[in-house]
Amino acid sequence: MPLLWAAALLVLGAGLVWGLVLSPADWQQGETVRIMYVHVPMAWLAMGGYTGLAVLSVMSLIWRHPLADLTARELSPVGAAATALCLATGSLWGKPMWGTWWVWDARLTSVLVLFFLWIGHAALIRAFDDPERGAKAGAILALIGIVNVPIVKFSVDWWNTLHQPASVTRFDTPGMHVDILYPLLTCALGFSLLFGAVVLARTRAAVMERRVRALQLARARREEGAPA
Image (cartoon, rainbow, N blue to C red; front, side, top):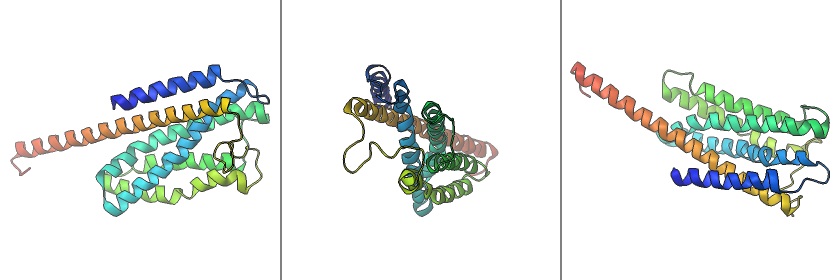
């Protein structure tokens, strides 16, 4: 944990200074392009995190792995926060570029649906008194919602939208200069490390909380004279 937190803060700090201060402005978008250094990593984490949630759900449903349930439970609020930041920064970027805060095009609408899936999973998994039932219901929802991830990714290619097509994850060459690409990738790595550190810290705290509850229950049973 200390090494992960240190790496996250070091890489993210360097990436943000590089992107927000040292990198050049875009020849068309001007200084507003700097929103990209937060918006794009949040978009990647929203989709990548939900893919990880689907993998954890498979592990939960097939192998009944308790750690998968705990990790999925703690992942969904962090993923929802990343998706909310993606939507918020996208609106801030869209206003000067498109002249409006929001348009109901395919990319923005599918990301909004992804945000609701994150929120729905976080609420559903906590809606049951029995943790196993909540974990199972949340896993089913996560697997149903995974179909939205490729829609988010390829929506700009499948439909004619205001949102620009992919500029980094292209099969030929990235559609941006290295002076902008490199700080963007550094920010993406830093945010990814921070995302992982937060999820790991939440999962570790959840494991400790479960252990404490088990010890308290065993102590209560001993005091009542029942077998632990």
